[in-house]
Amino acid sequence: MTDDQRSGCPINLTLEVVGDKWSLLIIRDMMFGNRRHFRELLTKSEEGISSNILADRLKTLLDADIITREDDPSHKQKGIYSLTEQGIELLPVLAQMAAWGYQYLPVSEELGIRARLLSEGGPKMWSEFMDELRETHLGIARRKKGPTVGERLQAACESVVNRT
Image (spheres, rainbow, N blue to C red):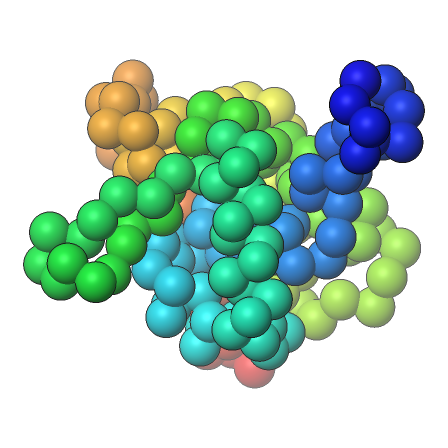
């Protein structure tokens, strides 16, 4: 345990890395929105993150090995952020949080559809989605071919939007 940690408790240590609102929302946007550039994370955040908070949280996530940053080959001053294996393995945590929120809080149908489908799909769906994230962020070919979980979640969201 280091001096800046409150305790050696695994819940406490996890919260010290991802326990603020913005860190989990950045991870959510990288997972579910495939937002990988600073500008995308900044301008497409429904919650309206400020640039200084975004920069700070990205640094925290980089330092904790939740994400990596590589230079964008198309523009040397831009970076591409990717989830690491540690970051990808947060998917079940986010799925459980989403399921809890869907069950107990007044979520919108549009934003709740992904939570409902992930909850219904359970660990099998989460595993498939994690394989897709590994392909996108780590370059590891996924085992299952055909429509992706990400595509199915997006189609369900679009269906709700078109219906309302």
